[in-house]
Every structure is written in C-alpha cells, then in structure tokens.
Length: 285
Image (cartoon, rainbow, N blue to C red; front, side, top):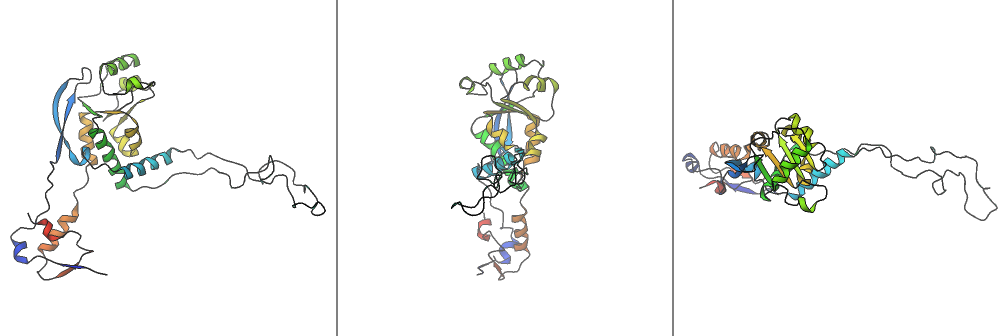
C-alpha cells in the first residue's frame, strides 16, 4: 500500500528555507597527546566525531569479529568414512538364522574401528560481510576505546633500542594498561602507526600480549578483533590523521539528492513515502 506526502510550496523552496537538519553535537572531539617516553601531556588535538565518536553497535562488532574468526579457521579437520577406513568387506554374519538384525561390513559406523558417519572434511569456513559493515565495525571499535579512556595518542612511536627489556621498562613507567598488575601475561596493548620501524618491531614481538600494526594492516583486515581484545590502544598522531582520512564515512548523498528534487519540483505533486524517507518539515530550521 502506497502512502503519500505533499511537497512544500515552490515559494518556500525558492527562499532557501529547506535545509538539512543540523546535529546538536560538535563535529569534533578533543584528546590529549602524550609523550611516548615520559607520558607527559604535550598537546590537545581535535578528533573527528564520525571516526572516534561513532555509535557503539554491539551487533556489528559481533558480526565483524565472527567474520574475522571464520577467516582464521584452518579448515583442515578430516575424518574417514566407511569407504576410507581399513578393514574387511566380508559379510560379518549370515543374513538369516540368528534372530538379530542383519549386519554386513565391519567398517560400518556402529562398529569400533568403523568409519565416521557425516564427519567433518577439509573445507573453507570463509564467510562474506559487506564492506560498509566492516568499516562501521572499525569505527565503533575505535570509538569504544575512546569512550572507555583506553585510547592513548602519542607524538610518535619510535624506540631508541631494539631490546625487549628496554621496551618493557618504558611500558612500566606508564599506566596505559590499568589491569597489568592483575594479568599474569603482562601488558595488553595494541600499537598502531603509519609505518613500521625495525627497533619497535623487534622489541615488542617477543611479548605475546603486545601487538604492533600499521593503519593499512588494520583497515585491510578490518581488524576489530585485535582492537577489542587489547586493554589499551596506543596510536601516534600520523595514524590519527590516516584513520580520519580513510575511515570517515562518505557524505551521504541522500539529503542533497532529495533537496534538489524538492527545489526542482512544482508544488502540489505527490510523492510516495517509500521514495521520500525524510519529512520535508524536518529540514526547516
């Protein structure tokens, strides 16, 4: 069943009164920039709300994590059916005369040493997920770190030594991972930068609960899983800029499209509600 709504008069549209609804929230957020070695505050920067203040969609986070975990599965599980196990094919008992059920092969699934009925075989567990869902999941995961005060922004991620002991000493000086004393495995921190450095990579690769990725690696893999499973996420200023550039959602052409339709349409024409999803009165300021 079609529902209709009447378009505003052309005189109102000509005056330019039809405008997109303005969000009451600021387009930017604020965050402190820390020094990597001293953890002191060096600057206050603005973050894009679309990337670091996106809505927390638990359903999309779950979908992306399940999609990632499916890709991680090797799929090498295998069992043998009754035609693949070794054993005789001779009929076990005579067909008649025993007063029991008829039996044929020792390789049947009900026998010990027989084949497996409907067992797993090597296959791919890969599933498909829409690109926009993965991007929204990334924005939601990053925003969750910001809202829980688990996002740390530093000037740069550069180490003067490749020794793991030196790197752990630097981590112990800071309180980025607030649960490190309750965790036997040590610090749980995800470091993200724009380009890998050899000293940093060598220093942290021996720590199981510390990961080191670039922004491109996070985006290409839609790595929501690693963002959520670490207690803290430390990124440098260059990574913030790259996240905002690559993860910012496109300007929705929906409002612009229908505003143009309203401006080019004479008054009195009826449009189906299925075509115009936003009430024209909502555009009036």
